[in-house]
Image (cartoon, rainbow, N blue to C red; front, side, top):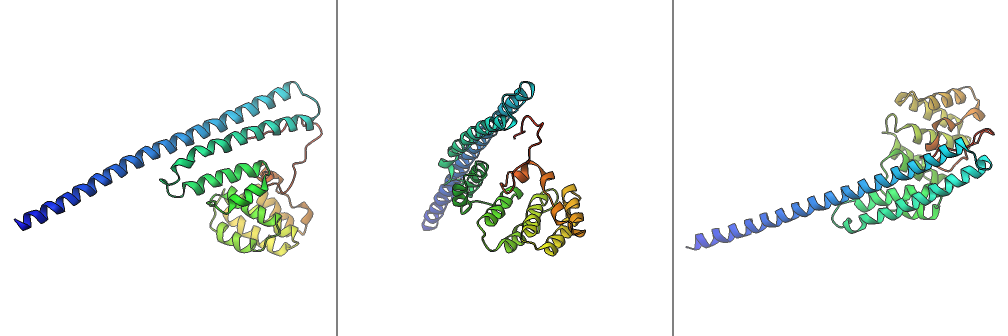
Length: 250
């Protein structure tokens, strides 16, 4: 009889654990679906913002309004409004932070990138402390801020985060770091870096900059060919051709 009671107790414990596990699985599935829906909503919002900007740009191409600078300012204003909508939309993730491991850091990374586009660097610097930096763009933003703030440790951070990056992810961080080395007049280091980069990618910008440094044409070094991803780092302003009537935004 005693053995039977012990067996019954053990079965009750096992059944209780199984019941608890089933509840956890159901809750996890519900949360996963809700997070996925938030992601879809955010993606839809970004697509709508992009479409609206493209429509406005096409309108300017057909019927210019004022100077190119004026049209660019209008597009920048509308883009900024759209980005602020996206930042607010990220708040929908907040109730699920406790249920999804690292979700808060992933959302902080998105918010950081949005604020970076708005050049709200005080908020960028605050969020960088609580981000998950694994992709080339966010890593490059971190390196760019370190350079802007004249922080030490860029060399070490680059080696830690970027040495393992492959094509095409390596292009932006390597080009950025080479640009910083050139600005610091560390031309030999920049050349060695681009030699390493050439082993990873045949990107045209990497190749041209390697050739420029190899021939001591330091002033010919340029990351302009990377396009929007480079200018989004805020280290250089895009030079607008006199005849250009509108600027393309993502």
